Length: 421
Picture: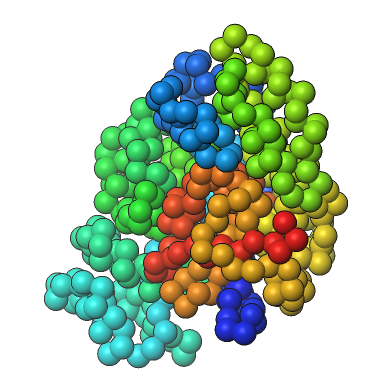
């Protein structure tokens, strides 16, 4: 479950509660060693990592003074996959496919028409064997032919509406996969091509991500637990980026320290010896961005939280974002009322994020914030996408994060800056 915060006139802040994916098992530190040791010049064929990287100074003719204040970043896309033991309980379930609606039959028919249903699809949806009317609402258990006949556009519109009802868990909490990772279900996970083709028919896209909500249907067509596991490993992976700061013999060290050294508990002078030692190398070098983050983020990046003890609070995105500069986490940020008062008293809204430590809210069309993250540099943010302990702390590109939170409709980012920074 994720929290919602709504910026309002007169500086008021209103919180709402909404659903986001919740984790199930235990903690695991993953990828940190790989991240610290990654050499940008090495082979890009490592399993689980998409071979894509870029530097914001690829043309050496660009003058040092023209670099952005955060310096020259080398960014590489990757995915963090949950370990097998995280998914073992999921692969054994045989969840049924059901659409749960609020309202009467005529309202539901109008909704389906607005989503793009054809007459034959409507007839199938309202057939006696599919329709189930109860005192709490209307359920439709679509036949396989109806489910497969929906276009990606129709499916996306329908599931965005269904996501507003918590009873539709996988619509409100869809699995997601980057478009260019789909083919690896065959090449890396060894799934049969026919299974992957069936999976593709059930995807619906928003931005750079494809979403998937029909897990029950797929599991009915994948009897082997190993194949179910391989599908889930990709569909539950968390898109992320690995980032290094390039330092050349002509790099302005003071400029870098001025940007990355801002914030509470900053390590500005601690970083200087490392930067200067790299600068003295004949061709310079690079350093993992993890060394530039405050202790809270540095200790958690690319890890999963520990599962809570009975009665112990779990920590959501707002707790993670507002504790970013705190060496000792403040658990008062788990209280939405306290967070609202704190943001109102300590932050001001800005046009767009542009400084290390800016607070970013991902908001829906009503400016109700579904998520909070911390801006680092070059549209890269520090984020935890969900309340549960199966959701790691990662770095993401801001546009990808906005797409991730577009489950119920278009989303956008609002930026805030701590007035003390």
